[in-house]
Length: 137
Length: 96
Image (tube, rainbow over all chains, first blue to last red; front, top):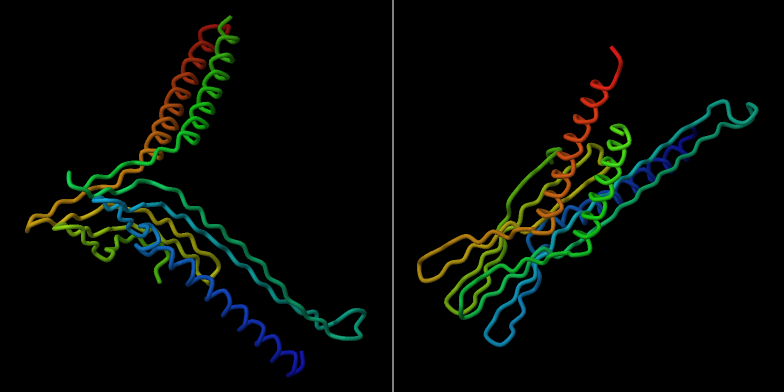
């Protein structure tokens, strides 16, 4: 690898790590209090604060390699690559209501999620029961 | 930064009448060395309510997660019972 190629590679590595660091910091910023508590909303005498749960994840991978022999021994080859991905999921958890009666927390119940979980559990149990009954009879 | 970090953070206080509400959030951060990856789970923990010199804490409960967890653990327990019952039945019916 000549000096110019080495410099380009170092520059690319630095650029990638800087980009990764920037995205990392943005993902870690999700861990702040402000990201799970929404902006307070004033409605008549009541103050409403929505809350949510946030899950975020990301991963990166890079690699560089070189073949000093090159293709058929003519010229040295080197290259690199990288990839990454991430996801952020937010889900409402509860609503905080402060009014004349005081402060209370009203939960947000995701009926769809509970129904799906219930159906899956019932199906699994039904399947196992059927298998057991078949063995008994 | 440590590999796994669990911390409770206090947010900015919100005033409503005589009350002051201080939100708290709990965050779990898992960071792979490298940096290669990061996972952040941030959820509301509760609310500190200060009113006329008194203060109390209100927990923010995730009822959806609690219900789904009960279903999952209940199903797992029932499946374990069924599997044990099945094994016993097979032992009884199998020729010695």
